[in-house]
Length: 467
Image (cartoon, rainbow, N blue to C red; front, side, top):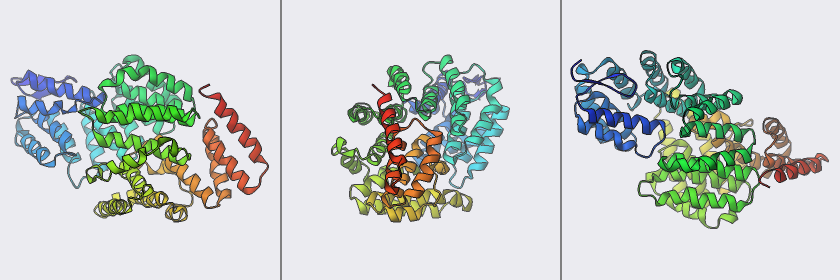
């Protein structure tokens, strides 16, 4: 067909420009590898202003940062839609709906599923579907779509990392480890497979093994986006923290591999703040924040800038805590009001889904102010952070809110309830010393003899890691 070229997946794209196709293919690679050069897609419509695929992918890239330019690319794609290939039309339908203001996430997933049934080798669209399902808190939907396309991509880079993440978010850790290791075997620089394997090992409390594996991989991360780079180091820091390593190791990771990312000229600050705040909240829950000096105060000063607000619900929650705990109450109240306003403007179905996210936001704000009693009243009596996936966070990221809840129960003398939930939690993660320490505290508050036995268990675990 005249004026048609094949993209990386072997699908037809209406363009005569080799440079346009090269930019599109480079973008696919950046998206799948969590690269820091995703802006390369903006070169594609420069090489061919009439290419529908180039314009719709550029519109998607810009949709969260520059709505005006995104709209311009969307209109350019729409104006040439009659001349587009069937593949381009399918991508246009899925992406244009995804970036529309009144989208229904379920419909957006269905459009991507429909696209991938017809064009199953398009892993770029698969990655979009994965991200969409992640922010819906629906790893089950993601797994269904991955299974749909897996037979056509048995030896492809990146497919197994996507598969592994869906499996681990569903609690299928053995299957997730198999998938992650297969992805890593195919491509040692498949960062999402590295990350998924890290998740599995960390959940299983194999902290020393995680750190060894991830630090060996770290030399490959220079091309990663600010999020992926600092998130991988966040996992390492968390393993040091959970494995009861010296706090200076956690501090070194924060200073040298998370905060230092901001010095890079192409750093994306909110992506760094997300991981920095997530780590400092963990440290705070453990009562070790003094080791970090004024770092939280400095970070809170950065996130008073409203340019960092309302990018991700998860980030907003962490910012709320930081602002509240450092005394920036008027800013925190403004942010909370903004979240309530966003919630009120959602379609009814989304309002119902996000209600728990809004309750968690209000509770985090009260917790940051030191009002544990009020914070607890805002949460369900049987709160479980894993039910809050819709804020756009993995189980590992959400678990800190469980730790906050356990502490609030103890701080408000609800030791019996704390014992109940901590004993259940320890059955799932017996190798986490901090859980045993919290249980020891709860038993002590109740005057139970088991406190001594639990304390000894905690000491043995603390001594077992990072000798």
